Structure formats: structure tokens, C-alpha cells
Image (cartoon, rainbow, N blue to C red):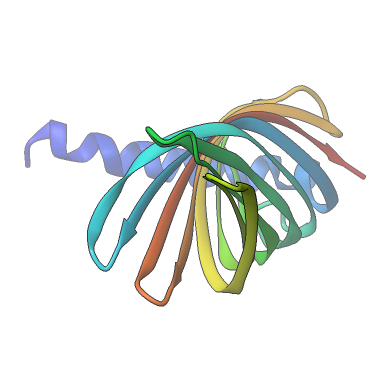
Length: 194
């Protein structure tokens, strides 16, 4: 067998042993928070309507058993995006929601880790349009909410039994009535374990 094919298997096996040895340090309750950039990518009935980005943040709390797999619940603010057309009309869209799902923390050694998360996303989008007319301006507001999903991966460094820092990539899916918003978040954050 080609040795290059064995390398991923060896790395995965070592990672499992390392995760087992380090499990006692990441057991129990945790809270974490991230801040980063959300990149909106919107489509209406399958047709792309453009992309935009803004600041986003996430707050989570949960519990891990054996320092590997657990559950989490939290809040995600996807920030807002704005645009203006050639007539001066202004449009703003902002989103947020509540998350609930599974959370994993896998250690390669005593400090370096990889994380993964996935679950449901109870989202809400709020839209505001300010339309300028000859008689003045009018503002229209609307909102939609439903259940979507999220998933993410990350990596970082366990400073000690209680604290870790890291970076992650998360994806939030929002879809309803032909409108699809795929929001990617690149963020950095920290975690505290009780």
C-alpha cells in the first residue's frame, strides 16, 4: 500500500487517542462568543441578487460529555446590509435568530483543537425600504421568520482547563417563499469552560 494513503489514517488514529487523553479538560458546561464578518449571498427564485457583508456575532452555551460531543443553544446576530438605488431609495435587511444543536471539540494534543457544530436556526429577517416620491418619502417595513439550519467548523488553542481561543467558519441557511439567503460568517472568539 502507498504510504501516502496511510498518513490520513495514522493522523486520525493519533487524533482520537489525543482526544481521549484530553477529554477530562473539556468536559462539562461552557459558554462561548464569536465576532466576525457575515457575507450575505441572496437569491430570489434561483436568480442571484448580489452579495454584501457586515459585522456579525454569536453567543452560545452548552454542555460536552467526555470532552468531545455535546449540545449547545445560543443567539446569532447576522448584522445588516443596506443599499441605495439610482433614485435615492434606501433598502435595509437585517437578520438574527436562535440556534440549537450539537457541538464537538476534538483535541489533537494538549492545546490544539478542531471544532464542529450543526443544528437548527430559528431565524428572523427584518426589511425596511424608504421610497422617495414627489410628495415626500414613505417607509415600509416587513419581516419573515422560520426554521433553517446552521453548520460550522473551527480550530483553536486551549490555553488551560477553562479558556480557549479560536477561529471559525459558519454557514446559516435562510429560505422561505423562493427567497434564499446563505450567510457565511468568518469569526474569531473565545470559550470559557466551568
